[in-house]
Image 1 (cartoon, rainbow, N blue to C red):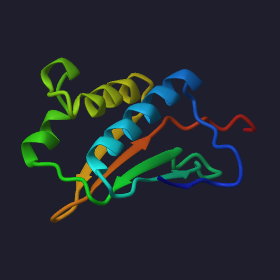
Image 2: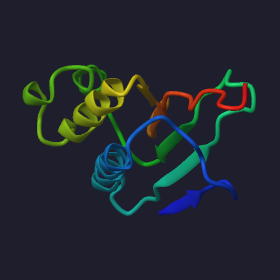
Image 3: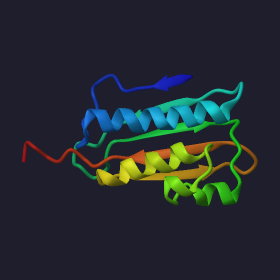
Length: 125
């Protein structure tokens, strides 16, 4: 696993527990799909003006996801198979705090899960 983290703390309007749950679900799904390949986690802080919210990506270059499996991520976790239930549950948790989760497939292989969290706001204004 490769982590790409900024030097300073990233502020977001989410609870620590919920953010940990989402990260754990996404990393567990990536580890299941990666096999012997790598998993990369990148974290980007919000911009100073509040235009860009904090976001992170979990990239699994060796993962494969069919079009049907991709659509299943946006269903209820109760309707999804065991492999992608973690992604569906993570999506529910992210949306419950006002964020968004997107999943992109590579042309032949690879999977990128991006999460945008609510911006912390401009406390100094």
